[in-house]
Image (tube, rainbow, N blue to C red; front, side):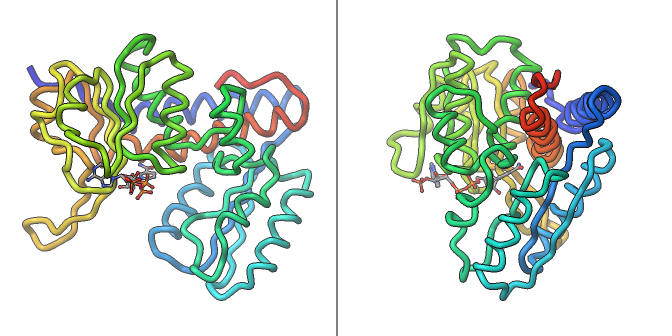
Length: 294
Ligand code: NDP
């Protein structure tokens, strides 16, 4: 039997609809319009696509979208000044500075300058530290999406063996913390891990966040495991055009896993939906309202 396909498109659409409901409710009951500011520096084509899609989905959910485009050669001080203005702006509840930033700018300095209460990317060390300490925090969107996708298969992850391959601040590390919060038993693997296939075969839940096309093979997967593929890799297709593949050899894993996310149409769909979730959560927290029902 082949694996069930976890349809990120449908799950993300459902999540966006629930966000829109909560936005309508806080607008009606509290005159609060959550607002998200997205800052793009330079003209990286992939970043431009992400920023456009974030703005469109923010407005579609009934929230305010503020877009700031700065030239690639902007001075770090000017970018920090914009972040300071957004921190002080009462109409802005979430601030996202699109990464990667040009090499001339210290990304860590910029991320650290974002008010933790408005840090909807969850990358500010204050939020990362709170998450690592098991406290309530704004958490990075992609790992949040991974957990939501997994819970469409298993309502409880308690006691399950999970492996997270990759330990970046953006994906791997926060995902580990979220899995611990779900009471899973977590193995963290990275480029120095020994015998990754064998580690993987122990796991009921496999998260691949590596950035290496189709690295995780079918025979690494325990039969029935849930496979969440975070990777987005462009490789040349048979027709000469680039095609998108994940970090998991999908066709092989499909034969063994219990459930699997496709690329595209899996985790990627959830990232922006979770950004909307974080924005409405941040807006409610800043306004002193109870957490919204998303
Ligand atoms: P990084 O490059 O920051 O991290 C990659 C991680 O993979 C590192 O921890 C690295 O280990 C580990 N790694 C590299 N090679 C191996 C190997 N051979 N075996 C085991 N581990 C290895 O990437 P990101 O976390 O930012 O992104 C990972 C992937 O997810 C990328 O394909 C990216 O495009 C995608 N992505 C998708 C998103 C979405 O919305 N779907 C959002 C964000 C990212 P070490 O630490 O030892 O170097």
